[in-house]
Length: 253
Image 1: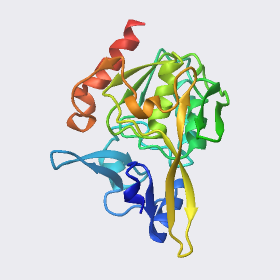
Image 2: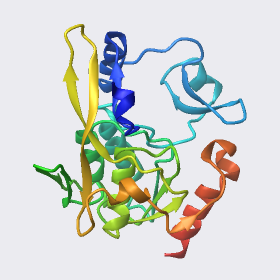
Image 3: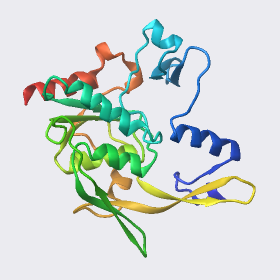
Image 4: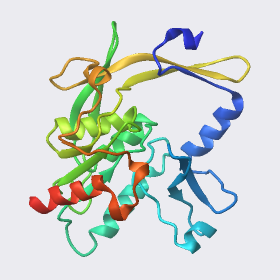
């Protein structure tokens, strides 16, 4: 039935998938093997997304490719907060790059907390035919984070709250966006718990940025000011054209 909706957003979860997601949300995923989270690439290889602390991957010197891979983990905002504190311990930053190219979204509360480190106030609303839920961000300044020049990297794998956060920072004039256009997936899902312990998530509302039509980002995706060819998984940090373009933008300010 969910597939027949044809909205490409609604989905079904088995009880096992629900349990795994709950552990991910709490930041409690364990690891086996080398202690790294990998994502398959289009060429049949893999890129390192996350490296777990104190594991073999860390000891071997493997480094993650991205900065903000998800808003599903409720510890992400604390990790960003601590990183900002560490980076500004000796003074304010000249610029900051937020890499969102593999951010598949997650929880609205986590997205709002991360946004709040860089801007604040009403940023839009989730709307249906009958209702409107305002999207308001609470300000939190960490070492000058509210004023630091920002560049956000996006691409086709930036989805849901990954798109909304990137779009809000761009629309508010808070950040320059670099990379490739996202596919447009900014609908809000409503949860339905079923008797057998499974769960259905049904798209029920769409995002309306301040001053723009509801659902516009669903139609267009987030469009970068600076287009960069190639997907993130084709490059290492040393030859990544997205990172290079972002650094050039910050140096020019």
